Amino acid sequence: MNPIVIATNNPHKIKEIHEILNGAFEVKGLKEIGCTEELPETTGTIPGNAVQKARYVFDHYGVDCFAEDTGLEIDALNGAPGVDTAHYAGPERDALANMNLVLQQLEGLGDRSARFRTVIALILGGELHTFEGVAEGRIANTRSGQDGFGYDPIFIPEGHEQTFAELSSEIKNAISHRGRAMEKLKAFLMSD
Image (cartoon, rainbow, N blue to C red; front, side, top):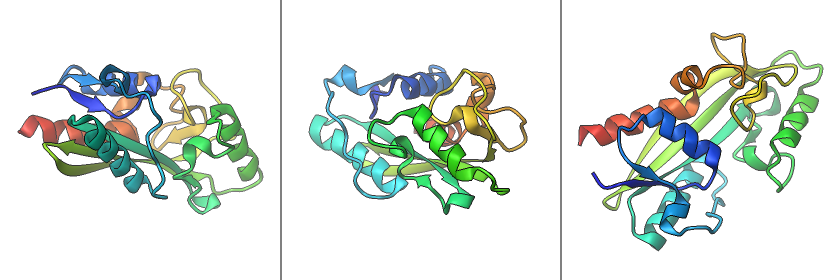
């Protein structure tokens, strides 16, 4: 199989995806195909943004690729930040500011249930395929842990007492939203 392009330049996502795939097939980041522009994410939905980014790379660079979009959905905030997860506290995409805003908004609320949702859009030979992964959990009262990225220091996955940022990458990747979606993608690609 030819290498497949991951439609992101986020080094944290690329590292995590490489760890999850564990050499099952060769993947490249956008920089490796000369794509340095910001990909469009204007559909207003997580699945729509994933498809939009994959189609952009396929249409402009002519390569098989997959894109993912992820959102943190907090029940007490009516599903926010959702599709606005990366820039919840502003266009700077500041993870610390995003977490602080969530913690501030949840202050004094009893319901801290939440989930991470990832949708992967794969364009292979011009055909679109999508895969979804969900990790249920809750929002911690304070930030905890040094690993991971984004909201990992405040998200406690179901069945655990530690945040994603406190868990080893092996455990996180096995139970995370992105890990679950990637396993579906990997099984699909290996079935060909």
